[in-house]
Length: 136
Length: 82
Image (cartoon, rainbow over all chains, first blue to last red; front, side, top):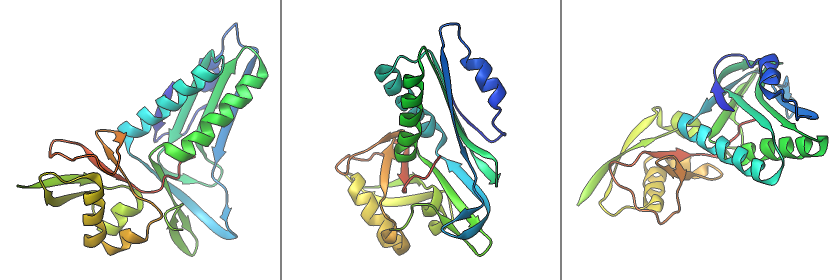
């Protein structure tokens, strides 16, 4: 399951979705808003997505992961809009028969999302704002 | 023959242009790379961005890809999800 949402991400319902009698492992990764970046205080993050393409690129990543590992079920949910410190920006959940695959697949999915999915975050700091990665 | 393409902007490119869709006047056989040249000329701060990619109909496109008025064209500045 792949989704973009402007609502808070509910880990409990993600876990329910991942539950399977064949699953011996469920691994979660949560990307969370931190209170600082390069020693500057963060007030909030503003996430923006190119919706249709963000969904299709996340689906490609999920499909690639399913070819590489024995994945029973997966959840990929990314937030959009304004997020405050401590909120979950992205949730990846992978259910597999054995734990090694769930760790590896989860890692692959988040690392690849950060490279190819058209989602952008602006850090609004207490002393300015910056689009992350935009400038060398 | 010239064509006017409506181009979607996101993130820093939207901030630079001050709008999320810009009309771009290009030649009828314009490519992705022509579009990027046009935008950097119209909006010089775009030339300072680490990288700019173009998506055509929801897929990343090569620099030589031809653009048509009925394509959905989007500028993809460096992504920063997660």
